[in-house]
Image (cartoon, rainbow, N blue to C red; front, side, top):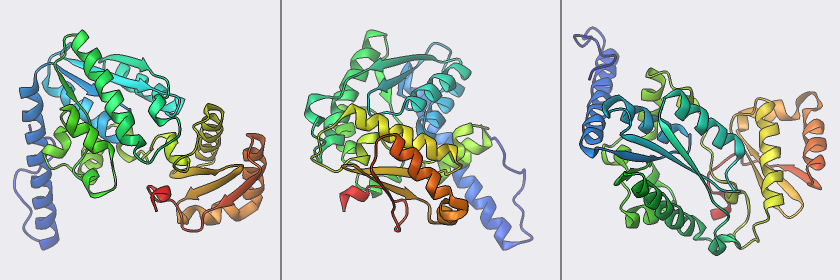
Length: 287
C-alpha cells in the first residue's frame, strides 16, 4: 500500500536520492506494520489518544474490517481529563468502538513508589485484557515505539510480562517515523507533545493526593492555553517547578507574563512558583 512515493527515484541530487531512500525505508516499515495488523485479526488497542496509539489505531482501521477493532482507554485520577476527551473524540471520528474504563488509583501506587509505572501498567494491562476478552477480542496491542526502549521506562517490563503486543516497536518504527506517517495521514496528533501521567510530576515516595493532581492539571492546561506546547509542572510541596522548552523562556519572562503565571498558579493553591532553568526533560525526578 504505497501512499506518497514517486514512480522513479530522483537521481540528479545526492540529497534527493538519500531522501528517496529514507522514504522507501519508511514505506517498508509501514507495509510491515499493515501486514502485522492484518494477521492479528480482531484486535483491542490500548488507546491513550497520544501520538503512537492514535497512529496504531488509524493503521489498524485501514486493514481490519469494521467491528474487528476495539479502542480501550483507562481513565484514572492521574490522567488529565482533556486526554480522555481527546481520545473519545478521535475514536468517534474514526468510527471505532471505544470503551473508557474508570479506575481509581491502585493502592500499591498511593505512595508513588519508584516502580509505580511497572505496578500501574501491570494492573491496567490486566484489566484491559480482561475487558477485551469479555467483548470477544483475544488480541490486545499498544503503541510503544522502537525509541521507547532507549529511555528509562519500567512499564515496558509489565508490557512484556502481560503478553500485549507492540507492533510499532516490532516493525522498527521510531517516534520520528510515527510522527511523519501521522502527518501524511492528516492525523491531528502528528506534532502533539509527549504527555506523561501526572504521577511523574510528584517526587517518588510522596503520597498521591487527588487534589494536588487536579492542581497540576489546571496549571498545565493554563500554560498550554498561553501557547506553551511542551510544559510540565513538577511539585515540591507548596512549590511549583515549571519545566518548559528553553526557546519559550523569553516569552514567559516578557511583558510581565510571568506575573500572570504566578498569580494564576497561586490561585490554584501553590505558594511558590519557579522556572526550571534546565528546561523540560523527561523523568527529571529520576535523577
